[in-house]
Image (cartoon, rainbow, N blue to C red; front, side, top):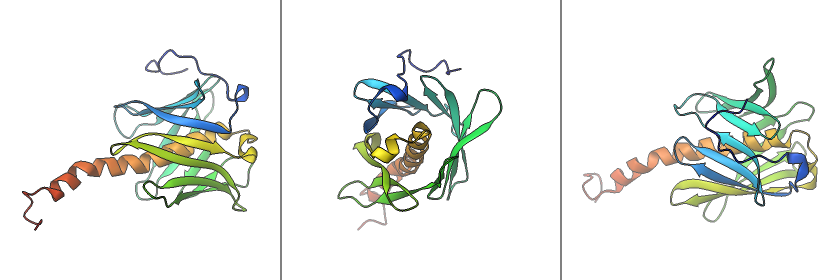
Length: 194
């Protein structure tokens, strides 16, 4: 069952759209929420809990599951099916992303001129997904997603995309938390500033 806080815009099944070029868009401020779209068709929504620490709700046209986070310095994210028995759909730990039925993937942060981008590659190093975050000021506003032909063929592409975006968003949110403190440190009233 989809949580009541989701907007009533219907989601489109992944199998009905071109999955090679997608975009994440931040759809709420607090609690955080992101929508994955193909053109103007919404495919997937991630909704963070009102209180930090709870699972992230994930909604698709035909499924609902959660992403749980454990750990801080090296977080482990795990996608779990909600309906019926708990089934692990995939997980990220460190930079390793595991999906049942695959050899796994590696998630890399790539250097960029202004913003880092992110890459999901298979074990041979072949890129499957490329993410380009977009910011609005210091906030993560969304991101462009390029999926390779091999990536579009993955049966659990939605799980891979949701886990990877949650991983990127968590890293970004930790940076967002530091912004007020950076401004204090840079303040002319700070005795440590010459």
